[in-house]
Amino acid sequence: MSNIEQLPYVIELLDDSSPAIRDAVLKELSSYGSDLSCVLDQMVSPPDSLVRQKIQDLLAGYTPSDQQKIWLGWLNEKCEYQQLEKAMIFLSEYQNGFQKKYDISIILSHISDDFLSECNDVNLFELAHYLFQSDRMKGVSEDYYNPQNSDLGYALTEQKGLPVTLAIILMLVGYRVGVEIHGLNVPGHFVASGMWKNKSYVIDCYNEGEIISEDSFINVHSSGSVKANSMRFKANTNVIVSRVLKNISIAYEKTGDTSRSRQAVDFLKELCQR
Image (cartoon, rainbow, N blue to C red; front, side, top):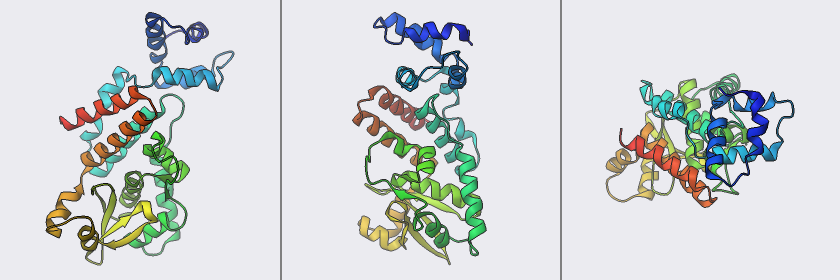
């Protein structure tokens, strides 16, 4: 790790136009890894929000070697729900860099504990109602392509998100309370599915947790065999994470952050090669 006493001089070079200088600044700042935010706070004159944003912009799209090594580490988990949670934690930390870190697992556990304390009957319907029909979570209606909408930590904190992000929340809370829920990756949309009284239902998390029979849903959104399409739409962890990465890439591309967009594509390529 670099010397904190040198940081003020490094920060003064943030606006230098020389590629060599910018590379040196990037190397110096990135050497602090996840400790950078704390190190900046410890400076005699901590940088203001504008300077911190410049640092974040410089680091955007840069994946340190230690992050490269741990990407796809979540595949080592035996449980798909744990795989999904770890993948989303990684992507949240990637998106936020040093500026903010969400305690995703803790937040999910708090939601699960609150649900169990308030509901007498733990089932798919009750959980969907608790999360999406009581203003706890909702589909984002404005600024849809904001990259933060694909960040699980942001979605949990702001209580809003994209269809796939909300479905992931339902799945991970369901895992904690003993309700098995899966993802359905349908064209142009993403929903969740689960069983209740030996019948399969679809939960449209983005549309206030609307619940309909899976057969009826698939009939509306596809043609041909309901059974065949049901199997085709089933989304394992790799499919879900791929969907999130595509959303992240598109969102950053639309905001002009091509560096991060390309990095999301690189993550996706690595995943597809496994």
